[in-house]
Amino acid sequence: MSSNACPVDPLLRTITGRWTTYILWMLFTEGPLRFGELMGLMPDISAKVLTERLRMLERNGIVLRTQLQTIPPQVSYELTEQGRALNDVIRALNAVAVEWQSIGWEPDKGFPESLSADTAAE
Amino acid sequence: MSSNACPVDPLLRTITGRWTTYILWMLFTEGPLRFGELMGLMPDISAKVLTERLRMLERNGIVLRTQLQTIPPQVSYELTEQGRALNDVIRALNAVAVEWQSIGWEPDKGFPESLSADTAAE
DNA sequence: GTAACTGGTTACAAAAAGGTAATTACTTAC
DNA sequence: GTAAGTAATTACCTTTTTGTAACCAGTTAC
Image 1 (cartoon, rainbow over the protein chains, first blue to last red):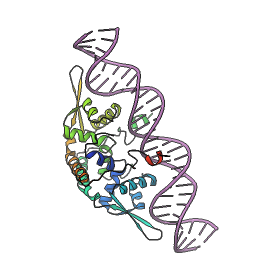
Image 2: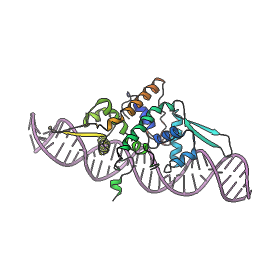
Image 3: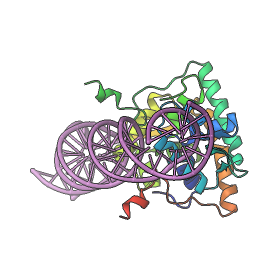
Image 4: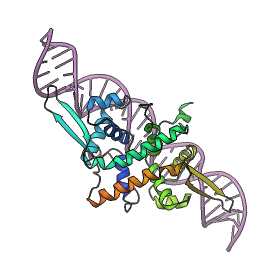
């Protein structure tokens, strides 16, 4: 992509994906969560995408996957110690979110990430 | 998408898009930038995508677009006052980026945001 | 044997996003 | 008249991402 010299680039590319930051937010605020619990908290994510994101975060040392030897086996996800370094980021994000919510800000629907509402209306 | 009750959700959906956070990072660190300057700083973004992101950020009150009455006209982009509320987020992000860089962390290439390397190899 | 439970995986199709290149507008310089 | 320069926009096509639904494993209850 671009600007390999910039240290934020790899970090951004890792944690700011489509559901990624949301998953981190959930693990940050709710603590360790099982796969099914994450699914329940994010009703619109599919198992496929959730799995993909969790695997990616695990590969990158941000999330720890723990398989419990129960019948049926349960799998728990939590932030690693390294992942918890994101606390300040997430806290700052939350502060802004609360502030902007208080002034009535809310995103316009027109941006590509969410839906092509303008064209979908045809 | 999900969890409408959660105040971070709309914020995340607005600022954590594919190039979005990077653009904010550039405007934060470099100050007001013209379209062509942004293109130069992010060699791999296309004019189409950059325009789309800038328009979205503008619609959402995060970026201010100023057209200078020059010949040819130049357009300058900068963070709005509201956009500058993201300072802490960006600073925290930078702190983590620097810290992780110092411990040699770098993202695995396997995550879906960048490429489907695993399946593309077939 | 069959369903249920959890946590996935896979294949296939659909949708979304992105890239490329041509085009626009307006003025100046040649 | 043509090119250059800035900041886009548009159409068209390709790549990437996502969704859907079916399926798997291992064990227990029925």
